[in-house]
Amino acid sequence: MKKRVYVDMDNTLCDFRAKVAEINSNSPVPIPYPQSRYGFFSSLEPMPGALEAYDLLEKHFEVYILTAPSYKNPLCYTEKRVWVENHLGIERTINLIICKRKGLLMGDFLIDDYDYPEFEGEQIKIGTTPFLDWKAVLDYLLPLA
Ligand SMILES: [Mg+2]
Image (cartoon, rainbow, N blue to C red; front, side, top):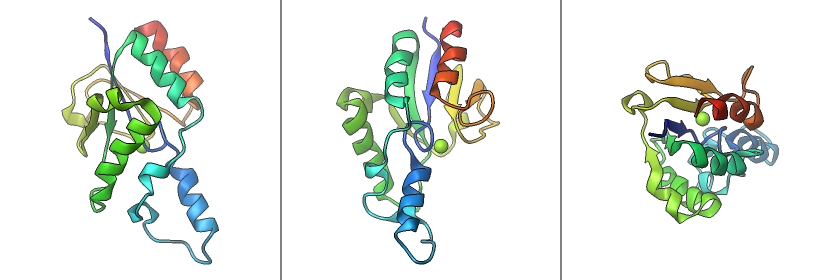
């Protein structure tokens, strides 16, 4: 049986940080909650190497996309679904889980830039040493499949 991997969206698959910086660079003052704007989530760029990494992970693991919603923005739920279809294809939307409480999900690994100490599997904190980028994540994870 394949091991199960959950993959986060914001700052893991898609570049949330870059979009916030872009919005603020076009404004004289920082915009509070730019993620509440229409089209924010659906227009995020993929993180470097993320889409290729997702393809590769699927060859070796049971993979789900696990994203916590920006729950005060109801558009977020739809736009995350749109993003997955646009960048990973409609079949991958079947494996999209939108859930604020990631610790409820049972699995072996969670690739995420945010800490979820309640997750009972192993967390791979992307963006921090030693998992600075997707290449480092794959180098670690693929031999554990
Ligand atoms: Mg994130």
